[in-house]
Image (cartoon, rainbow, N blue to C red; front, side, top):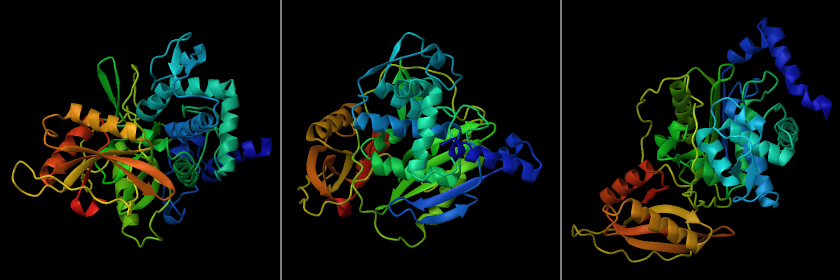
Length: 422
């Protein structure tokens, strides 16, 4: 195991020696990208995808993978309170501002990592699962090997600067696919738009998710040595792609590069529809009171970029069409025209969760949804049963307006046209 643990570090040394640069300069000079078909793993675009780079806060994707493993096998529960150590409190921003001796709920930690990229919360999870952060980092590296990440070496759970913590764009595309394949029911956490604490709304660092059609995750990252990193996933016409961009010079240029690569890949012939298991949306509307400081992209000023294929349908994880469910009869709109549009606020694993999502949407937008009819419909998606939570009886303009409002306020929402009603 020792030889494998230092393989990536050796590669890092070769990069520096071969170029005549220091290790930091060698990595900082590297930009890499890859786009894969999420179902088949087929590589559609490869731009230096095996270059050795730093993962920065993309590291937290593996911290979350192991957390989801622990949830599935019963070592953790979402409501479990975990102790906060002095080591966790000492982490640099981005952080939640946790205090030693307090506790943090597992689900709060997950949401803190996904939206705020909180380094102190990452250490809380690491110590709960590994005893110490360094032992947890060894667990992360071993898990990476198991899922095919041959050139990744972890030294911490957060992605804070460590010259020995290295990876490749290809390895992170593999991890992105593994998260969706092995932990589909938790993937919707990555779609969370914001996290509310003490009256403050903390937005997700993945700003591209708000302007790229079909994107619903996954994670941003930034350090001086790594540049601006992004792992992302998007769905169009039933086909899901995974993209990873490493070493961007700015948050905006990184996002624009990702958008261009995904557009290019979606334009290529599909190797087959993604008919894998549905990734049912979780009810992640619950959020605990947390606060923090810093941002993955703090050192980059916020610049408004022109929308890339701007659309309203960006938040929900789409469910596969259910051919065995008959469409419900739609009412007439108050304008007198046919009202065959709907808004879908999630696809859930239980009817109760679907009803709750509909109720929350109506409470959030009572005026926009005043004429809509609540509908939670059972549907089959492969071997899975999901409950699609929709508000029906709307025209296109009202449906899109309602989804824009709900998305802005942190809800999952997708406008559903008559042709998609099934």
